[in-house]
Image 1 (spheres, rainbow, N blue to C red):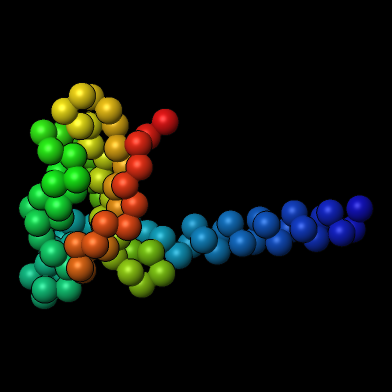
Image 2: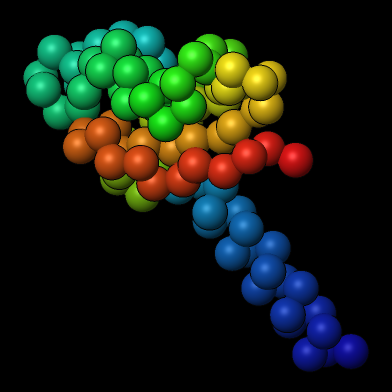
Length: 102
């Protein structure tokens, strides 16, 4: 029983640490990062995401700071209406994740 409680406590703490490491960036903070050249512009990042699914349209996007790395998350629908979730490294534009949403 104690072992189970220890495992559950560890899992809870690990989950809380993960949540604490990712945060959404406010528009003014994102603008400062773009102006400084730290991250690509949202227009550039959107073009890179849409290039993965020509004819698609972006539904939602957000910029997060995850463990000191800026990640641009995009939800888009392709030309056939299929929803895709993408993650890009906002500094380099590298596609990190590109999968069909369930």
